[in-house]
Length: 406
Image (cartoon, rainbow, N blue to C red):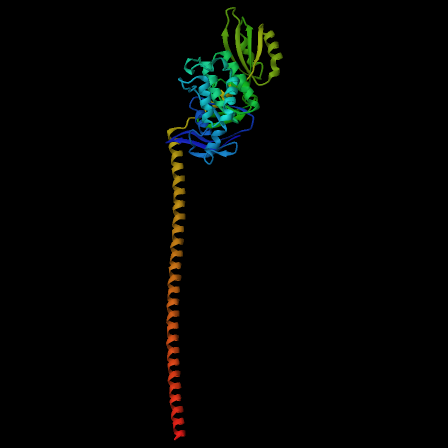
């Protein structure tokens, strides 16, 4: 449904998005994650046709945003961040206006508006001015404006920001229900929400795609070292020494000391089957284990691991990339110039040949006329001589006849 191919968005020397590629299939709910300034909103704005890429192309349901921009926009329902509503309109008027913008046919408009209002739970406030609504209801109105007319694709930018826990759950369930009839791309800073709603995650950082996978696979890939949290009663402070006796313990870190003098530690391990060894060593050193639990890797852990310590592009690197691009553009320009020069040479050559052929044709025509004229003169002379000879013969005949009569 959405195919982003080699897309770059550049502002001067700054790359908001650099050569990104990803696909979203029909019926998928995909999370789009990234830090502030990572390029999420820029990418969403390019998919919706709000801004154009510097390079690359985007296809929505098979239509290019360059070649068929209106067709692309007709496929998309967009909920921008910040719930931009018209405060002087009622909820119903706003949704009706959005239906008009989407060119929903008049005979279908009333039913489409009603369906959007019911889907987002706005029946009670449909006649209220949007400026009088709470933040949660404003989010719902913005969402209703996106889904009115049943677009095939929904792009939702931070749909639950600023909502209370109950409203978050309601919006989350609503988005899940869209899976039946829509493909959804959702951007959010709440990673736990993304892991509960989405079946696939695209992570962008510093304008580049760093991961595309399911939340479960991302969590599993980043959990190379497992972590145990252990609370112990350790009077002799020997717990940290067990690291020397168990090779599969990579690190032990004290988290806090409780009021009852018990201590909480975080242990990084490479083998989950060492729990028995930990119990045995602790018993041997008079350490009582009060609690032991495995810390499951989360999408937050995966996200942090993927984006942290990614190098920033230095000014020197940016200048080099800009220089490389300019060189490439100059080469392309030179290639076009050479091609144009060759075309001009060929055109000049063809024009000369045409003129030469025209000149030769004119010369041949002249010679033909001259030849025709000469032939005509010779024929006329010949005819004249023939006439003179005939006249002479006629005179002779007359004289002969006259002599005979005499």
